Image 1 (tube, rainbow, N blue to C red):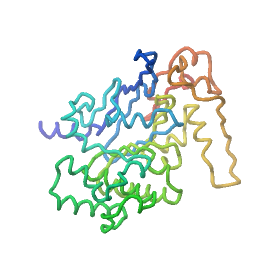
Image 2: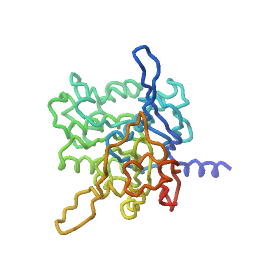
Image 3: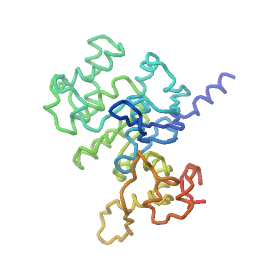
Length: 330
């Protein structure tokens, strides 16, 4: 009986996000709520051990808000985030603080995410100190070890952030995120502020660390070529909602949603002889304060039909591990 229970637990996803919503209230000068910005709506996905889920979409689609809400840096409006079966949103702050060590974040801007007045060794030690892990000597030794793991030298422990390049500072941010032995890293545009050559180095580093530390990633980005390289599965977001999710190779070879097709058509190809139809979307993204009825993409979709304007499509599985929200697929 015990072995059967253990098997069931092992097969369970590491993280399950269900019906996640985050609506920001808009208030008047007198404090009266006048409306809500629907930043995230009914987002659902699962993340398995040592797996990478890429979240992509245009700026303002809600992908960063999704990551921050899972970590409760922003409190959710509703939904569930089940980490090993425990709903993170239902935990009291004291209990969540204990669980928090297993879910860490790598931020987009490596400069603003590190205290400029603090030596980098102390910055890496700080999470361990907050969670009361190790004594002072052990924390210093672990910080130096982590610097070596991310491609820096242990003796750089005593330097300040301004003495490092952008790529080096992002490595420091990754080392700090690893300080508490997490199982999940939520990476919010971790390479978008870096040069292309440095991007590849950081991506390769993250793949090595994933193997070494058995990490799972939620990798948030707008660069599809970067996401393709690192992700096992990709979720495409539009105006706060997932419109398509599939294994990486499947998504690139058989995209189903018109928005996904438009995103893929915009990827540059390093071959001047290769001709690919580029899908240009007309108009701007509607406001999340007042999203359109029906399918939220219908105002820009070149294939929209009458049903799209009146009825919201259901996000459902149409092939193995391939889900989409589109009436045209029906």
